[in-house]
Every structure is written in structure tokens, then in C-alpha cells.
Amino acid sequence: MLLQASLEFFVLVSLLIIILTVVMYFSSSYYYQFNQLQIYSEASEISQSIASEINLALKAGDGYSRIFYIPEKILNAIDFEINITNYRVYVYWNGGSTQSVVYTKNINGALKKRENWIRNVNGEIYVN
Picture (cartoon, rainbow, N blue to C red):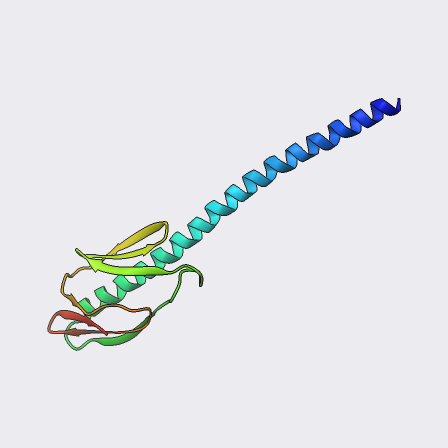
């Protein structure tokens, strides 16, 4: 009787360990996907905000000037790069990229993280 109880206890504990392992695997996979989605969402927001500033400067016309900010890191932890080419704003980070559309190719200067000064001079957009 004691052997049977020990065997049942061992089977029950083994089954619980297997169930716990499966649950941990799926929850870690879910967490990874959720984290990747957060990174992509914030990078997309940065890209869209830059494109909006450029498009607003273009639409506002000659004489427009404004200061806007770009965060230093995605989710305060992930470094990224910004590139503007072929009517698109690209945001690259280790593991992905996103893009937004701008309405002009006439963009002079380079964007930097933190404070940026954007202005429209005779239909050309200047940053910093």
C-alpha cells in the first residue's frame, strides 16, 4: 500500500511538472511576441511623427518653423537609426524596421535624437 501511494505521488508530481513546463513555454513565447509588438508600435509611432512634422512643414509653406523632439531610444532601452530617402522615413533597430511616407524629396540636413528644428524655406525642408 505504501509503495502504491509513493508511486501515485510520483506520477502526480511528474504530471504537474510537465504541465508547468508547457505553461511556462507558452507564456514566455507570448511575452516575447508582446514585447516585439510594443517595440514595433513605438518605432512606428516615431516614424509617423517624423513624417507628420515634415509633411506639416511642407503644407504650411514658406516661413514655417518649429522645434520637435525624437526620443533617444525605443521603450527607453533599444537604440535606433533614422533614414529619410525616396519619399519615406525609415526607422531601423536591431531586429526590424518601419517606414512612413513623406510628400517631398527636398529635405536638407540630418535628424538627430532629442531636439530638432524644422523649417520650410522656399518649399525646401530644412532640419537642424
